Length: 266
Image (cartoon, rainbow, N blue to C red; front, side, top):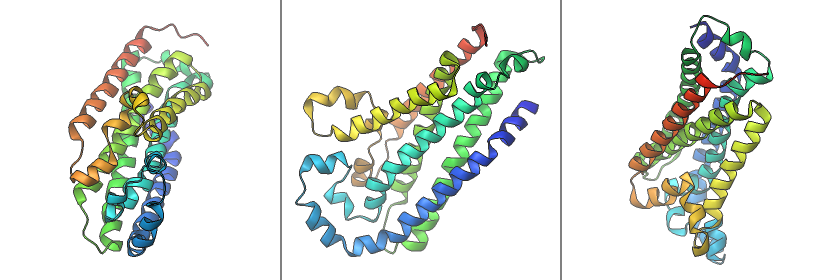
């Protein structure tokens, strides 16, 4: 319990900063949605002249942009995916690799607790923090759309967006845990996993419509949580999201076994 309190206290400021950024971002996009939709004819006429590959690279779809969720689902979610991924990565590396950087891992292991308990409590703190960021996103996007958006929109789409972001931060947090235990270095872990994040996201979005790059899209988790298709179908990719969470939990389980058996040398 002392470890849980310590980790919560140590990461509270970071969590509050990220929550503030997410809330303000939701407020900005929600408040301009009606304005953009009122001028949509000008925007669409401009975008119609753009090459199709250009539109796909920037996650733009002319049919969905006419909907209230279209602006957020195309441009807003691009930033959100990156933000949530970075949050999960940096938090996990701070909680795990940070122990090696701060030279506190040996002190932690001499306490009368099993490695499994130490690992589980750290994962618990990580899970609560990722859930809280997801919860604030969900509550504020629903609230701000209700306050600022006058046209009809789908709450199912907004909830689906929120779910995708939780899946994203948890997936990359799980990778960050594993890489933290392998590299035992926070900066190196952040560099590796953020590289994977950007490769997956832009590898998926930029190669839309390119047949030879289909394999790149298939190995990206974002291929299985399409915001554009969610808006079009008014339904989320819930099974895909669940399966990605299962993969994330599996990676965490592997990390726990590694942590229990590895030789800690500073």
